[in-house]
Image (cartoon, rainbow, N blue to C red; front, side):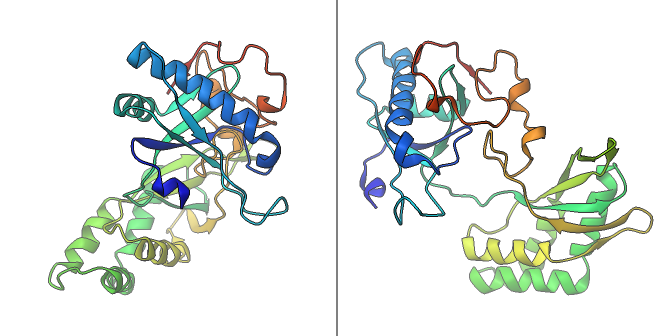
Length: 276
């Protein structure tokens, strides 16, 4: 609640390769590194003294808490600095790498779930199977009921809303391999939610995730658990498929080991920066 009371401009940052589990021990180190690097960025905008503030998360439930906050609050900055941080989004220095995110989230995620058990590497075949299942009479009616129950759509347009939602589905293939280098592709499933209501999106995602996605010749897709990347925190890929370490001049973590905040503070804030 204290963060909500802080005046805008403000934003949230998530530190790469930081799980949040050691926040009690590392809060001061991470906060100072964020403040130093964001001050350098702010000085490019204003060319003067900037008193950037960074507030660490407070563990809820004490040291043994299981679900610790992972974002830091950046405030006492200008709109120009906020816009620059959000526009480039990913900032990588030699001592810390972080992602800038808006304080308020106004749109649900486009990533719904991940499917396995397809035997094809053709994204179009997977997409067609998903769209066909969603477009069945039973599933279209259920999607309409989920959306209609939590948001005021006109009854005569609700099926048009459902059709539009189905048409937005797209997939991305993850090149999973098992022992021996055998490809076992997985597909992340994306779609643009027709509602901004968190309850409706959650219920819709849960219903679609529980469905089976058969094809005539290429297996039957079933949902698998999304794997969080310990480097960038994305749930769209595991650590081995993280794209950031391959970026030229990348200063951030490359293997998903403990962040350099546990190491020496030498060279703080002086490294070359890259953004993506």
